[in-house]
Length: 178
Image (cartoon, rainbow, N blue to C red; front, side, top):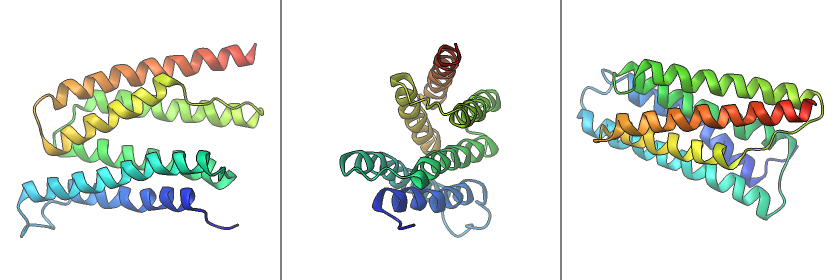
């Protein structure tokens, strides 16, 4: 199996996720670096990873490079990145634990639902609400990493979109099941 460009970009995200997590939670390890610079480095890594998320899907569709590996690797990389960011931010006290619990519970539940649908030959594609959810989560994560004003408000907007898009997936799955 040859590694195409979209899969390589997803793989980059797989490797950037633990680096982001380390920068967020291992701050004592980097004691010679001012904490604000650790935020800048974490934000830079997150932006690079987010850009690879956009381009791997765009290139796969535009150049007709969709693969079975990509169908597994892309959502895995996405989940690794959001898990690293949200858990890291929660552990350093920048993200509300309830918000993170709700987001991660939805992510795991919908991933399980998609796996179950795939095992039955169905495909539950990402909805518009799912894409908005992803964008809102990315914006919230960026604001939380930088500890900017409105970060908590944006986190709760992301929670609302996350729960709504999860509800949409469930409704669509039950329609497919009928």
